[in-house]
Image (tube, rainbow, N blue to C red; front, side, top):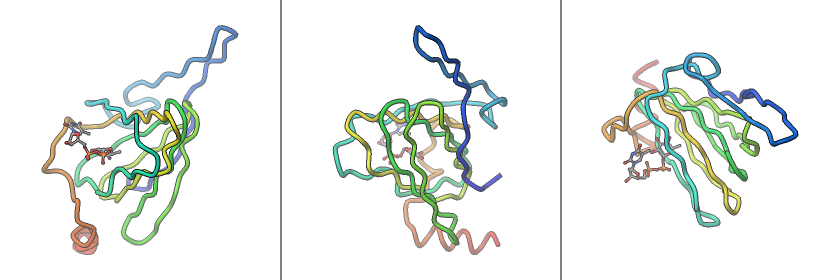
Length: 135
Ligand code: T46
């Protein structure tokens, strides 16, 4: 599965406050091996600017909002994450850039693999060549 997509997460509405939940291989289409979060991103700063050769992730804006631009080498798409029950799936070999973090935004990332710095492609031209080689 390689096309990024937005999906709704369960939202259990309650007068005491709402609750959302995800489970491995249910709402999340992989086994979660790592969780990290981005926060205190200064206004105007960009994050990302890379692709992964062998990693699936789901991003959720737990608080505030951000824009995620994804690029599969042929098509660019842009998604706004602006509520804590909205997930964005990003599979392997997708270039991604995160921008427009609102003040106080917190972006949770669920990942299918432990951290591996060798699995990053940080050069856009290299990314495009890899995509063409895979075709
Ligand atoms: C991604 C987007 C959405 C670790 O030590 N362990 C980790 O699990 C991660 C994710 C990062 N780091 C270290 C490596 C760097 O020294 O944290 C530092 C910042 O990482 P990076 O510049 O890759 O952060 P972003 O926000 O550009 O990208 C991150 C993820 O790395 C990436 O996989 O898809 O968030």
